[in-house]
Figure 1 (cartoon, helix red, strand yellow):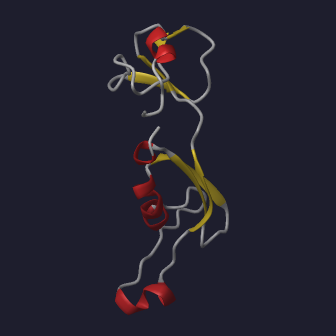
Figure 2 (figure 1 turned 90 degrees about the vertical axis):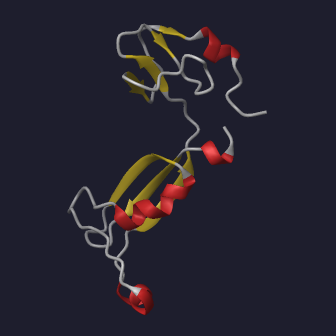
Length: 122
């Protein structure tokens, strides 16, 4: 996967309750935005961004605790299909009406094209 297409997982610490929460499958350009707009799932506290010169003194943002590039495969199959795909470069990669797993499927077949197609850009 190229850097522009990489997916990231971010773990944030809430500025209010100090509990951690995870947001997955982000492009790098969305990582910083998530910390400034995502409410805490534990206490529902929303980040606050103070305007102009007050930004550093009065803003309340969740802190980035950890950031990792996702390297695990995502498996997709059409909702009514039997074959699982794990390579977004596959010509049959489902983009609409699909089921997605983050672990290898236990039922169904893996796509032959996905297995034969390199997953990284040359």
